[in-house]
Length: 262
Ligand code: 2M8
Ligand code: MG
Ligand code: MG
Image 1 (cartoon, rainbow, N blue to C red):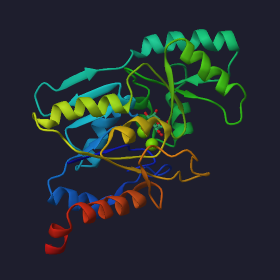
Image 2 (cartoon, protein in one colour):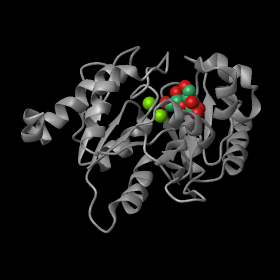
Image 3 (tube, rainbow, N blue to C red):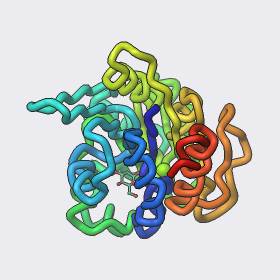
């Protein structure tokens, strides 16, 4: 088994980005040699820092909603760009926005300070969040009209809008389900790799749907999305607190013998 997890709003708290409430479950996974693989909308540049602060994250991970998969087990690291390049996404976004006079703002056209303000990230992290390779987060002002109209135009152009915790993310055909497939190839070693997946937003749906065991974290603010995601279980609490509980419960269920021995 491997645990494939979203970060923001899932392993990390939506506002403070703290992951420490998940330490007991991370410790158990470490003891059982079950890798914890990030599959996130964050960039490669952000992940380099996060892997230092969360040492349990594996050397293989998916970035930019599955647009980029990185394997750092070998030197030089292997970087697979599975998604549509950001420049192409920017081009398409600007064309549709001009046609519709839409209110969205892309990460490519605002300052690091503005991204820091939107996300609550420190300035240096916000700068790293702006270094996109195969995705484009778009800030859409709350309650601004035309969101559905915009999404439909994007789909007519052959692209997709994936919903993150705060932003709309413009993407091509790659998503977190594509990343899961690639990670299975990289880690499976010829044997089928079973996946336990955790996520909180629309951009995680493809990951949860492709997993063997899936947990959806409720949002920290606002109501839970009503539509179920295939067989995903809804955790009782958001973020790392819910993550910790859901993983410990899953381990208990999967490995009752080992759990009682320890
Ligand atoms: C963005 O991603 C989150 C993921 O759910 C969102 O849409 O709210 C990304 O730009 C990511 O790079 C960044 O670290 C994160 C910070 O909240 O926001
Ligand atoms: Mg999330
Ligand atoms: Mg995410």
